[in-house]
Amino acid sequence: MGILSSIFGSNKKLPFKKTIKFERVKSEFKITIGDEVKIWNKPNTKQLNLYVKGSAGGNGLVGTKIDSTMSHHLNNTENLFIENKVVGLTKNSIDLFVNMYADKKTVEETQQNYKTQWIEKLNKKYNPKSSWELRFFSENKIEKNDFLIQTIDKCQVEEFYQKDDQTIWLTDINGNKITAENRIRSGGTEKTLRAIFSGHELEVLEFKKEDFWYYLEVGIKK
Image 1 (cartoon, rainbow, N blue to C red):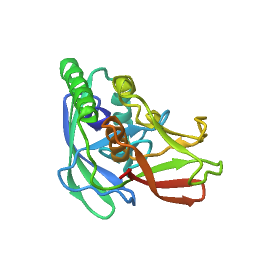
Image 2 (image 1 turned 30 degrees about the vertical axis):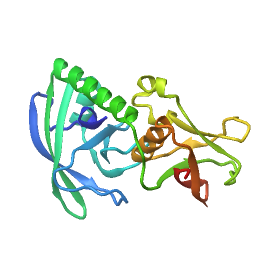
Image 3 (image 1 turned 180 degrees about the vertical axis):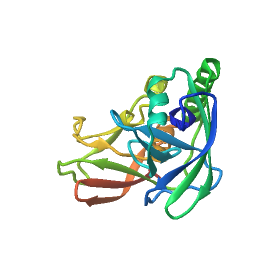
Image 4 (image 1 turned 180 degrees about the horizontal axis):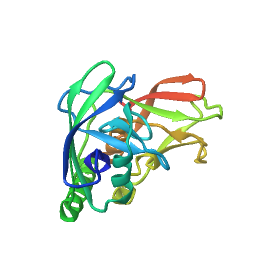
C-alpha cells in the first residue's frame, strides 16, 4: 500500500536515503517525474515489482529489480516507513528516490490516515459524469444480459479496507455468484462503490470479450 509497501537499499542499516534505478517495464500505465509508487516483494524471492499508485489486483506494473537488501527490510524490519518519489525516467529505467526508516508512531498514523481518507472518499456523495471500465477474468462463458454487478454494502466499507478485489463481483440473474476474478483497476472500484453508495443504479453500456477477459463499460442509469 503506497509508501508503506516500497523498500530499497544497498545495506541493512537504517535510516537510508538513496536514488535507486529500476528496470522499466512496457506498460499501458503512465508515470511521471514526482510520482509516488508502490513496491511489492514477490514471495520467497528477492524480486521487487514497481506499481503505479492507485493500481490493484496485480495491475499497474511499470518496473522491476532484484535486491536482497530491499527484500530483507520488507520481510524483517518492523514499523518500516518509506517515502519515495520518481526523480528520473528513460525508456528503459526508472530512478526512484527513497527515504526509508523505522518509526512505529509514523507508520501507525499513516496507516490510519490512509484508511480514514479511503472511507471518507467512498462515503462522499458522488454523481459521475462519465462512464468507466470494469474488468473480470473467467474461463466460464458470460453473456452481456446474463449477469448482475454486485458490491459490498456501505456499512461494510471499513471491513474491506485494502481488499479492493473482494468489494465487487458478478452474479447470475438469480443472484448466484459467477466464478469470475475481479481485475478492476482501483479507479473503477472507487467509482463503482461511490456510485452505488450514492444511490445510483448502474447499467452496462458496452460489453467486450477477449479470450477469457471481460471488459464492461458501465455508467449510471439515466
